[in-house]
Length: 338
Length: 119
Image 1 (spheres, rainbow over the protein chains, first blue to last red):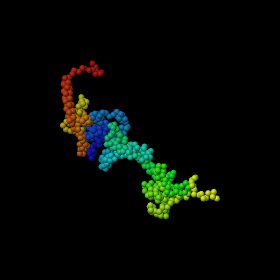
Image 2: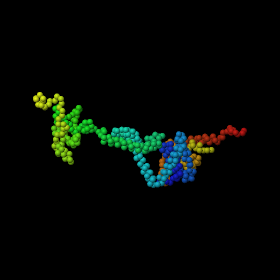
Image 3: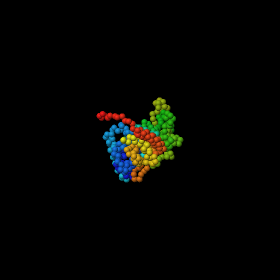
Image 4: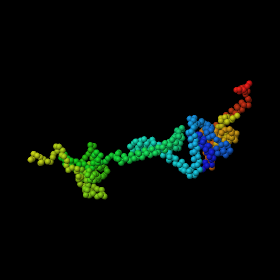
């Protein structure tokens, strides 16, 4: 490894020079300090005095490069914060040297470095999640497809930031770091939001909300059969029913091709109902009352087919109250005959 | 006399001059300047000057990896750098000639009393 042959003192000095230039963009710092270790090493080999003051050295570099002195606003808080930063940087440089000297750690670091684009993409998704989490937490709607285009845009921007592109001059270093910190911080809350949303979607599906009920309903209860009685109170058969818009009041949707309808009577009897023979084909789901399959032919293992014999379904009433003014077949028993 | 102030104005030309014939890397250029007698200039000033000349389009730059050592950044002069070097060399020669002739004929200095000095 090429860096191994450099004197640690020179590495530390070069790192300190770069630290003193950290208000510049990474490109400017590279421009100014590329090859610095080589130059310093050679100078030391020549017996030259090693430079001691990295800050003064950096100031000389930038002044000669025409970059102007370090911004005053950044120089003023050269107090504990700056000291802490310098110490952190020193610790980082120490760690880097240790890592470089251990092949396994070095290989691991190189692997992690190679995987940075994966993190850039993940960071984009996390920031996208943060931007949309408010909606995710409150909405009961399904995620619209178009949102994934927005997610892709977040990923692209984050990857470009990782590559040092699409950044304003001033925030070149800070923006990607801040974005990464924010992305790490939102992982847990975002995970909560996503699981909450998923649970809600799950509950919605299984509570039937958002699903159109099929067949006929009366106050939320399925209607399995209809019995019509005439004005004289007698049970009618082959009654065709339609709603106000002319749609047949089907128990089953004929387009589903079902040959039977399952239902339960109030006393718990299991019913298998089917259109009357008078209805053409299988399209008689609005012709009442529906016939039921003969229970004596029930086979537990086989579903009924159209060839199974059917019988009249049991009506709830044999007859009902005749309507006022209806012609009644009871004239022979009128009191006047007595 | 401290020549470092004088040098600041002409360091660009000095740097261009020492790489006129051969490309060089940072410390190599410092060494050439020192060999030429310019030893009062800090190496950081030379490196900064190289960067500025490069940014101004006077130099080309390329990195050469080195076996068993850190990589080196080489600089070479380009056509624009040569043009600037030629123009500055002409300016310098004219200016130096003016200064030389001025300094060869000493101008009469009025006697100035220093503070606290007795007559």
